[in-house]
Amino acid sequence: MAPADSSAHSGRLMAVSDVHVGYAENRQLVEGIEAHSPDDWLILAGDVGEIAADILAIWRLMTRRFAKVLWVPGNHELWTAKQDPLRLRGEARYRYLVEAARDLGVLTPEDPYPVWSGEGGPAVVTPLFVPYDYSFRPAGVATRDEALALAHRTGVVCTDEWLLHSDPYPHVDDWCRARVDYTARRLAALDPAIPPVLVNHWPLVRQPTDILRYPVFALWCGTTATADWHLRFRAAAAVYGHLHIPRTTWYDDVRFEEVSMGYPRERVAWEAHGWPFAGPRQILPYVPRPGRAQAGGQRAGGSSAGGTSRAAVSGTVSPDTGAAARS
Ligand SMILES: [Fe+2]
Ligand SMILES: [Fe+2]
Image (tube, rainbow, N blue to C red; front, top):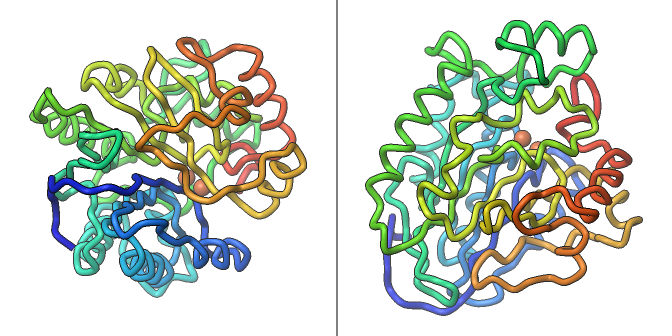
């Protein structure tokens, strides 16, 4: 697989995140994902799993099925979980995964950005790695330390605090700042004539976190430093996961697609609401999905009756990002 190309082709740009293959049901679902055309591309938008060997196995499988596979890390890939023989931490773990991806022909946030020139294009697809910096804080909370103290008092603390190490950066917010600088420089250098599809595990804007079951969990969900990137870099669309609240929303007339598969218990709840997991989401060419768009998406603002409805649903399904103190 070439690192980048701009040759004309048909096919579809697909995306899925949070496949969490540590769950047997999820692994079975992922193993069933197929391309519909030899020109289809697949974005894996983070949280493939925690164990390096599992992640590599999925990459290997998908590169055999899709013309191009792109990956961005989620927090789970960055964990140093005790079950994983790979003991690397922080940046070293990320770099290991990048090299392993490249060996398999999977594009990462460190590679040239490929141009989608099929239907719905041209668009440059930009895998990003911009994590979080605790700036999605509750009102009145001024600092990271205050916010973390509040989270510990309320018992809603992301497992990242135990398993995601930021070495050699002192803290993940320092790592995040470095990633924001690096990524903004690369995006600013893009050809302004070709809009990007921005792909990041964590949402680039804060609004999607407004419906979390536990609002304090937004601390681990992004950074305010990227709030205007969809406008500043003239995005065609933005793809993210992490929240386990699959839906389409619009901010400033830019389409944001949350593409997570989520945990088995969450899918059961979505199914009960009439929204079964339907496989990877088609990003380009854009095809509106009337039912889902009404359920989760609204243009320019993000807080219509549809969003309220989704908020109610998200409260019942306990998404990864709000389910429990150490989900
Ligand atoms: Fe996840
Ligand atoms: Fe995540």
